[in-house]
Length: 127
Image 1 (spheres, rainbow, N blue to C red):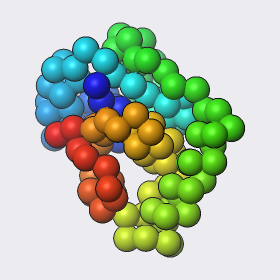
Image 2 (image 1 turned 180 degrees about the vertical axis):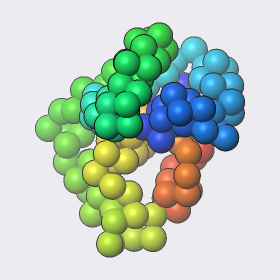
Image 3 (image 1 turned 60 degrees about the vertical axis):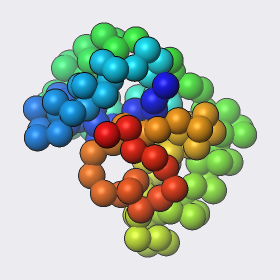
């Protein structure tokens, strides 16, 4: 089981250098989780980059288990930002990153992401 961050999904829809590795990681898993917050972020970011339809198709095709943002997870997301957020820690997680972080931490899963931000946290990479 892995959790997916927006950065990995964007790498796939934009055919970035890490896209093949991200696709392979997704294909190797039976259970793929995404936070409802991450899903919203991915759709927003993709739409701004003119690949909104591609992102929606990818999300629909992957058959994610979408995890809800609850009052308890909302607190953990805020705590994650307080620990790892921009201007607070070298990881510099943004608000959207903290949704993926929270699910990975709460479910003790590896996180599929692209970039260096999460590598400076206590989350294990799926790549």
